[in-house]
Figure 1 (cartoon, rainbow, N blue to C red):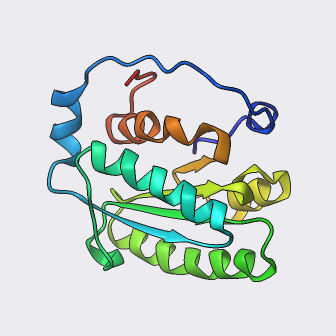
Figure 2: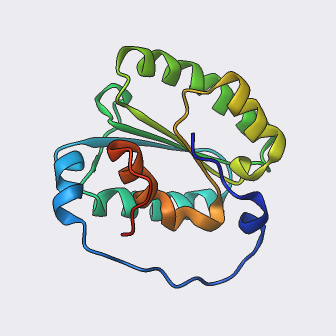
Amino acid sequence: MHLPDLDIAKKREKRENKYIDLQENISKHFNNQKYFLRTYGCQMNVHDSEAIRSYLERLGLTSTENIEEATVIVLNTCAIRENARDKVIGFLGKCHYLKKNHPNIKIVLAGCMSEQPDFVELIQKKYSFVDIIIGTHNLQDLPKLLIQEFNKLDYVWL
């Protein structure tokens, strides 16, 4: 399970991204694959979900509203809204069922809830089937992390 570096996630700074073309590698795994994206919380989460959508579609994934068609499931979470945590935990039950039946599905928890140490600890203990936990300040790393998950590589630069 990939976990966010909580100290880095707290910092707001611009980083220069380095890119190497991995189109052949990407199309091998993501062509004709679908993603399911659910957003919980505030307007900032809606904004972040648009960035997530862009990253996923640049990988070649297409959106689906049917979670059972998805290869990648992303839950973009909010730590501000009280009932968002309960909804996320409840939805993870459905994700666990899907992961049991389709172990190649990748489940991603994103957003500010993923930057809360107590939440990350809960996910590690009770929801270890989650593949990637990523905070709001390193969303640009999502494509790299997905490629790593599908390829089980030690490192990848996009």
